[in-house]
Image (cartoon, rainbow, N blue to C red; front, side, top):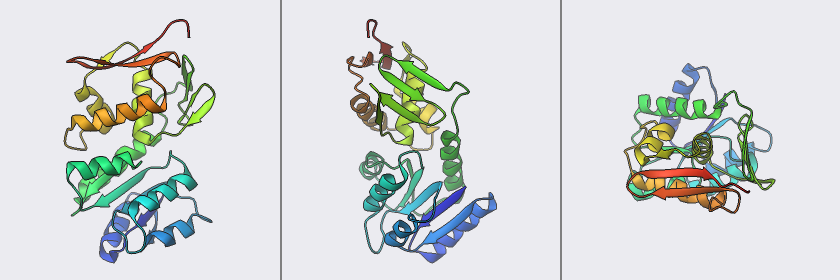
Length: 229
């Protein structure tokens, strides 16, 4: 795997580079956001690790440009000193797949990288799922509704697959969190609710596409197929 580290601290970048290379990965280091974006013209990366605070352009702008150029299947992890819950929600809402708080705990960092790489692999030997007007390409990690592609973050895609593979099953927030985040973050119901709200909107899970996502009071969430669609 080829990693891009966007970090203006040379010492921090060097440590992350050494950790990733010890696992057999290739690493390119960029001291600012623009140099990374310039490299995208000729270089393909499999994973991005970006410092939220860069000397030239903001981390969210780098994320936006990376998504525009590389799509939504490439993992993007942020390193940030903003470790409060609101900031964490903001980072995930903008389209990052994960983040690590600074100062970085290196064993935790490598565990999170490994977790994202596992999710990047095909989740099941089954090639595709189709429910109502929603089609899921499991190997290509793509979702279409009524024939049109829908852009999802990696976590949103994993969450969608879990629900579509378990139609009619009620998942508690705790079960969803454990299945998708693997206890990497402190448990926060807002993380689940935010992702499900975005998923409901992006996939039109109100029934018009033949599928409805329901909040089951006191229990959690359930995805159902509607007959006749």
